[in-house]
Amino acid sequence: AQTIHQWPVAEIKAVGSPLSLGCTIKGKSSPNLYWYWQATGGTLQQLFYSITVGQVESVVQLNLSASRPKDDQFILSTEKLLLSHSGFYLCAWSLDWGSQNTLYFGAGTRLSVL
Amino acid sequence: GEQVEQLPSILRVQEGSSASINCSYEDSASNYFPWYKQEPGENPKLIIDIRSNMERKQIQELIVLLDKKAKRFSLHITDTQPGDSAMYFCAASEGGRALIFGTGTTVSVSP
Image 1 (cartoon, rainbow over the protein chains, first blue to last red):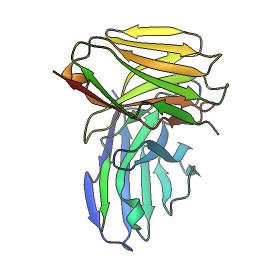
Image 2: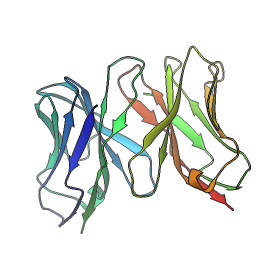
Image 3: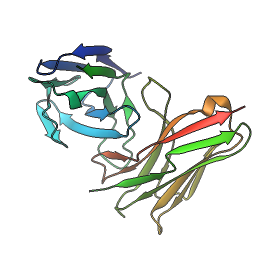
Image 4: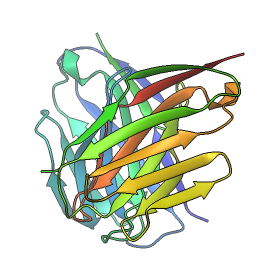
């Protein structure tokens, strides 16, 4: 069975400080990977997606970057946090690239920027 | 790109009654429509989905209807229970590259 693990569970960071969030998928080779962001009570906004190692596509510009250093790992980062970065960050994976694009979400990282 | 509108944003129902959430989409090429349930502080979980080759799907108390001509789909929760209280999101696939989510509906079921 596939498992998705996100770390850390929560972070409290200062404005201007760096950030690195991680996501690991086990039990599935070459998954499609995604980062989503959710403001409190808000919708799910896709940030990045990756279909293979070393390849990441940006969907929205939020002064964030993402990398896929390994087949099973997806990293979200920034060098300087903004207040607007606060929210719930969700990593997700899907089986394929076609019409049956069911997303399976990790438990998420709750980020508070002060 | 695809946009998904979801209404209502808040839905309060009595236990045992039905709850209905409506979504509309713009891209006629969208062909996959899942629904996710998110409990407070948790991640969204898939509860039911429908593909464009179907008009209706039911899993226990959940019914999804799809009207491709009108570009609308809806979720109906029959015989609601307190455990159905949560945030619900509809979504539509954008040519398979991404799921575009609606703005969410907070469902509150009171005893």
